[in-house]
Image 1: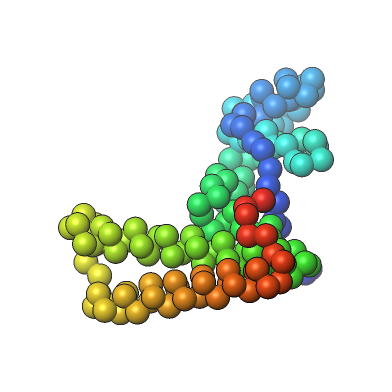
Image 2 (image 1 turned 90 degrees about the vertical axis):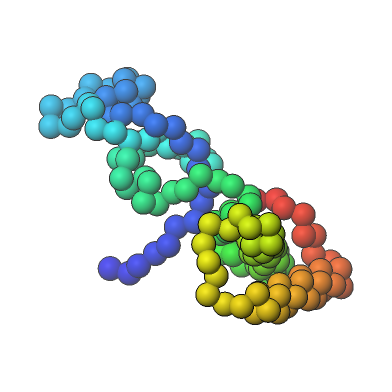
Length: 150
């Protein structure tokens, strides 16, 4: 068999197998445990199914546009403008994370001791700032809207 990676945004809520069967109007089969933990899953086309807790939690994360997984749909696009936008959003997310880390370092609230000298991080954040500026300039030249729409 071939391997695949799925990328989609879904809606879900915790629901055990028994409650899912009641929700669907089904009688639970004798060989299924109604107390199995899981999730009611709704896909973008309205299709609904039930997923066991472990399998669901291994596959899905809460959607947060401030985190890298929120860019996954754009990364998979056949449209280079959407892939460009994903690259930009990923860089901005990483930049903000590093900036926040450096601010914590500066105010003494960083919960770990960095192994690299501060000067290395300064070079990194400068490179990221330059990279962001380059992508923003390209976006203007290429007519790419960098506003988030995922």
